Length: 162
Ligand SMILES: Nc1ncnc2c1ncn2[C@@H]1O[C@H](COP(=O)(O)OP(=O)(O)O)[C@@H](O)[C@H]1O
Ligand SMILES: [Mg+2]
Image 1 (tube, protein in one colour):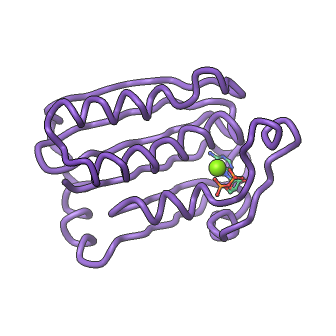
Image 2: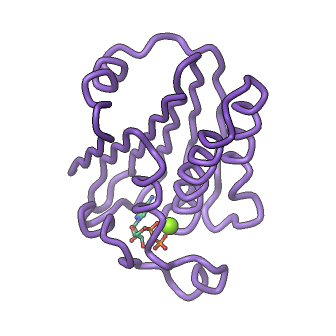
């Protein structure tokens, strides 16, 4: 198992403190996405965006959460055997966790390189496979954390502060 962390400047201390001791969320959403289920993939991220909009989160933040969670959700259906998705909403942040059902990433650092993709023909025919999803998640999050390894379930969590 390997681990990858990204913290936007100034977010590491408070994010680590939050993650070490995450309190009960104000709102909790749960979803599952199936392997190659491109018909339904995208619904979880749309639902997350809507829930944040309802509580008055500003548009610029809504867009970053929608992008990061959409890319992660698509990866769970395109590259993994589906996933459980958990979204915890607090007054000051949203914490989204994608715990997929494997088969994991061989090399997380390589997966993060813009343009790197192992997408097969079916995934490419669906219009995915540019290799920009993970870099896009990084660009659109305050904290990105991945735990993965070959033959393992991938755990990806994203924090976005409002
Ligand atoms: N949940 C996942 N499980 C296994 N491998 C993944 C997962 N997410 C991403 N990857 C790997 O990282 C690569 C890059 O992902 P990404 O940047 O989203 O590009 P793309 O989805 O277009 O291939 C994927 O091609 C795949 O090899
Ligand atoms: Mg992708």
